[in-house]
Image 1 (cartoon, rainbow, N blue to C red):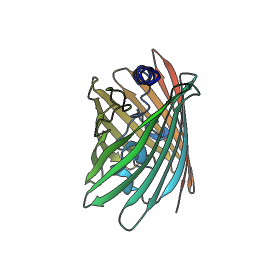
Image 2 (spheres, one colour; image 1 turned 45 degrees about the vertical axis):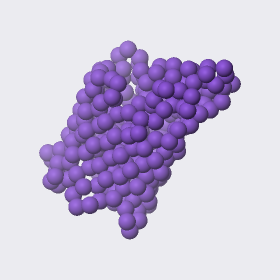
Image 3 (cartoon, rainbow, N blue to C red; image 1 turned 180 degrees about the vertical axis):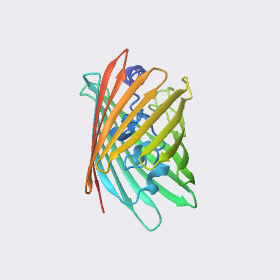
Image 4 (cartoon, rainbow, N blue to C red; image 1 turned 90 degrees about the vertical axis):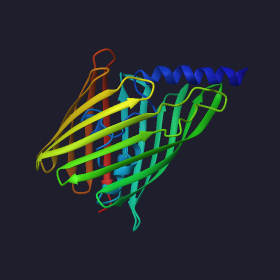
Length: 271
């Protein structure tokens, strides 16, 4: 009976959190959040979370930590760590994330690899997704994600990503499955200091979400960003500060129905 109750609680809580912030398919890194919650075209260390196929586009490896605070509820906080290292065969990535509070939380630990073949970079990631509810124990499942990005010209990129390709279940005792989503994105650079982004995200059980973002490199050390989402309507803005090997990013999102979110990231590149 205890296992049955645990299974039902997993289903209910994951369904509830998906309405606000999906702990599996949420976007990681304040830079991507500031651009409108974009996933495909981030092109930074956080690609190990967002689009493993883009990770090999990095010129240098590095490490990054992040914190996401949502709607003034500590039960919706997320702590993240991402790392990448360049090799002769491609780029390896590590991701660790924890979402939730003491009573209910979810953790992911993942390893990914990305390689470039001509104009296209592709990658695959395997992660362990665990859900824990105090008093009922925990349950975990493997999740596989695929991604890629192509450079059609020096100023135009297209990409795609699939989260939870195998439609993994929440637990062995439940028929409910973790979210499976497909993202398609483009990036266009009309000027050296301006990047335009567009993305469509489709969870197989939900309506599609349209995302648009703009990044402006105001100075070499200061980058400004903004973006919008549909379904539901959200507004984002943020900035990035660069100093030698370090980068600090902040973004804020606004959901009219639920409130605001704040995202912080600190990165260090191995130059």
